[in-house]
Structure formats: structure tokens, C-alpha cells
Image (cartoon, rainbow, N blue to C red):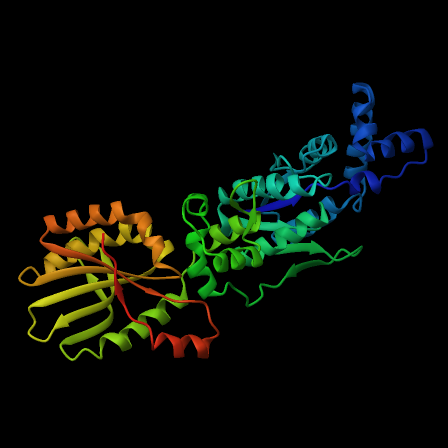
Length: 397
């Protein structure tokens, strides 16, 4: 079943009509928080009844009904609805009316989602929405952007494009449901891989960042200057979460370029992307496999952006060790992780972990090495030309 995320707007009030001017004026009076706050409980109850009846009896009572009716028809009624409430009393009030009318619906209040303060909207509202969004099963979601604050629906459109979530809306005053096409756009993998390590509060506060990198992070809108340190923006958090769950084609390019470096060594037999199956059925892939010409030494190399180290440590290293022992028990074995990064000073942050891994490998009679290559984002021709001049360095820990 699809879950339709629908921000709650105020069109139910704006569109309300009634020949009784007293009733009409009473309902219209709640369009501002100030006037809504002074209503008595009886007046609120009356208005709720008036709006509930209007919602039920008029097909075009509000953007919420028009759009959700169209989405239900398109999906053969197999939907559930989450109404997103802005941080206002009016949104709470309208949300109750909508959940009374729409079956299989629920409310989710987003603290800080309001238009009185740009800072609160960005730092609290959008941040709280992303916390809610991250907990959802993405493949079941649909964004209905017909309703709600324009600033927020634009943000939903961006999120939908990044996470491949259908974004739907009713075109103007028609009943025609439109779906924003999924555009063939994505992240610049160079930028994503190389700047991802800095999108971490600990690194932003503990590692000295060069002026050049700080300028780039600010330019992309990924960080901003806080009272003392750089802090992630809501777009930085979105960028961080999104690229943490996607495959990078840039890593494949780096592997190919590194292969061209290693094959120049006439004492080695070099293979790229070597799949393996362990005795317990687990599978994996070795990025680069180096074998000495005499067959006595073997080196298993994993190529990683620095930001992906934790994934290697947790998921791949145990299988590398197991494979090395099962396949090459009679050879001198080395496991190497080769980082591509902006600056080698990042490696200092993991010295303790490197030593821990080294000890684990020594217990299995395997050498562990950390190598790196420093690179800068460039247009493709320049990147290839400069990469030819790069050298693989060894990191001591």
C-alpha cells in the first residue's frame, strides 16, 4: 500500500462558502493564528462542524480533497495518508477534520514548520521533517505537493527527485493529476565522495579544515558558520543521508586508474574486480588483487573514499580475512585499504581503529596496510591528466 505524504494547508477555510454571512464570517475569522486563539471551545466546535460538512459535500472544497481523490482513483483506492501538520494551532484543527473524513489516515506534526521565522523553518522544521522522513520506507511513499507552504513543497520536490519518490499535484484549478517526472539528475560523484567525510559534526569541530575546503562547503550550501564552528545545513544533512546510501561511479573510475598504475610493476600480476564465494556461502568482490610473479605473495586491496571506511570495517574486512585464509593459506598475505581523499590529515582520526584492525589481522598472520592518494575535484580531462602524476602513499599508524 502506498503512503501519501500530504502537507495540510488552509484552502478548506479559504474556499469555504455559506449564504449565512454570520457563519461565513465566523469560519473565515480563523485564517490567522491570532483570531483563532481567542475563539471559545463552542465556536471552534461549530466551525469544525461547518468545515467538516463542507469537506464532505463539496468535491472541490479544498486542495487536500481534490488531490487525494485523484490519487486514490489513480491507485485504485489502495493508499494510506499521512497529513503533515505545520507548527500552528490552525493546522492541528484542520488535521482533525481531515482524519475524520479520510479513512486510513493519520497526523504527523512537524515542530518548527512555519513561515514566521526563516531560521526556525530551516533549522527546526526541515530538520524535523527529515528525521521523520528517514524513518519511513521510501519505496512506499508518494509526495502530494498540491497543498501546504510553497517553501516546503519545493523542498519536498527536491527530496522526491533525490530519493526517487513520486511527486504528484493537481494542476491549478483542474482535476488533472500530474506527476513530476523523475529527471536524469544526480550528485556529482567527485564532490559526493570527497566532501562526504566533512559532513560530520565531529570532523567539522575537531579537524582543522583548510580555507579552500571550507569555501567549497559553504559554496555548495552544505555547511554554515555557527556561533563557534561550522555546522551542517539542512541541505548538508539531506546530502549526507542521500549519498550514504548510493553507489558511486567515481570509485569505479579510481579503481581503473589505480589498475593502470599497478600494472606498470612488472613483478606483479594484477586483477581488478575479483568475485569470490566463501565456504559458508558468503560472497564478495575484491577491488584489486595483486600476486607476485613467483606466486608467494598476495595482496587484497579495497579502494574506498574516506567516508566509506566504517562500511569496510564492519562489512567487508571480516570476509577479506576469511577469504585470504581459505584461498591463500600457504602464501604471505596482505590486506590493504586504499583511500582516495582530499587531504591525508583525515586519516589521523582513525589511527586507533587502524591499529585495532592491524592487530586483528596479525592474529590471522595477515599484514594490514593503509595507503592513500590525494585528489581534487576537477573536470574530467584535467582530472585524468593530473591523476597520471599522482603517487600512492603509505600511511603510518
